[in-house]
Length: 329
Ligand SMILES: C[S@@+](CC[C@H](N)C(=O)[O-])C[C@H]1O[C@@H](n2cnc3c(N)ncnc32)[C@H](O)[C@@H]1O
Ligand SMILES: [Zn+2]
Image 1 (cartoon, rainbow, N blue to C red):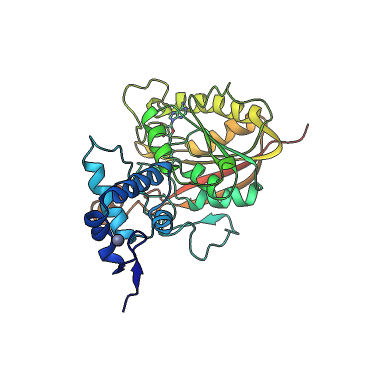
Image 2 (cartoon, protein in one colour):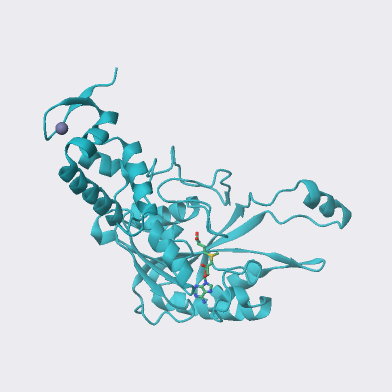
């Protein structure tokens, strides 16, 4: 038996699921106020669960009501309700070897696999926990959908995000909408990773980032500074500029982690990963770790399996996570 609750306006006892209908019909004015409050909390970034605690209505009703109001656009401007089931991964353990593999990519908080080419939140979580402290400043200058900054915010670091594409920024802001102590609200710039003049020298505690892999996946159309429009040789040169800027903004003794993969052209491998690593070494960094990250989206089945045999090549199923350290002078 579900317990009955007492109406706060007339003291009638009702089942929780009848309550909203009761308010709607018996206390029209108060009901309108309540809905305004729900919309306000939702738009401020409270989750359905948190709103439930405020207004004492069932989660499902709050969610459905918000969805209905979202469609009736004239009356309210309702943001997408935040339905979050877990704030953290279950049974999380730090990686301890140089091979990382996350078959289940991770769906806690507002993470989802929707942004094309986004990285598993397990990667920034591991990097942030290993190479930074609470209250540190964490930079991701290829922000994308905001995966790194979501982790930074959850782990109480101050995030700075940069992306060249205003659409990515919109998505990242939406994903970062959840409430947390205001100190950990990230700062986000629509800017170029090759020129971080908004960020002071020696001011960042950790860089954790995931650039495009030359033009293997294009992230935009018509944004000329988008590095996913550059072919391999030019891309590597441009990544040299990114390495120099990373070096400039990072504090001495601190770490810079970057995920990058290789590619194939015609019949041969192009060691894009190693070439980018070399650019970071040239900028003055020391190599702290080379981590192999297994890729799970590459299926050695069907057509690709047959091709691998027929043309005699292996399907690339790994990327590199290089961790660099800026030496003390
Ligand atoms: C691999 S995605 C990052 C995905 C991100 N880690 C995530 O989980 O969503 C690369 C991002 O780099 C951005 N980008 C490309 N060129 C850039 C540039 N010159 N400066 C800053 N960002 C750039 C793209 O818009 C894209 O969002
Ligand atoms: Zn009542």
